[in-house]
Image 1 (cartoon, rainbow, N blue to C red):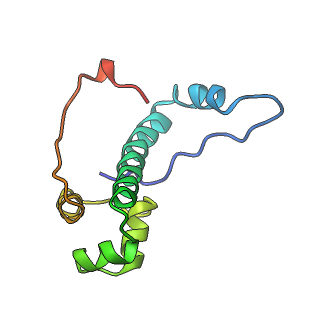
Image 2: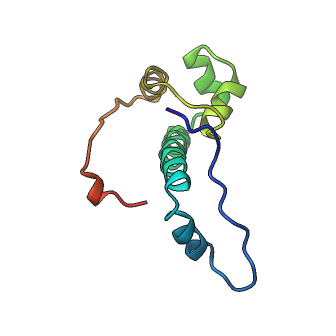
Length: 111
C-alpha cells in the first residue's frame, strides 16, 4: 500500500549530518511508517533500473516488451507510482528474471 505522502526529513542546518536528522525523524511513528513504505518501493525501483541496465536494454526496449510506453517505464524506475505485484512480475519476466519474496523478522530489518 502506498503511503499518502513521501516522508520529508527536516532541512540540514549547519554541520548537522543527514543521517543524524533522519535518525531523529525515524523516532516519529508517522514519519517512520511513511519512510519504510517508500524506502521499500524505492529499493525495488532502483533494482529494476539496475537489472535493465545489466541487460543493456533501454527503457524504450523494455517498454516494447511490456506493451507500454517508455514514459511508464521511466515512472516505474523513478518510483513515481506504486507498482502492483502483477506489474512487478511482468517487468521481471521481461528482463528474464523471476521474483523471489522473502519475509524476515522485523527485528532483523535494517534501513
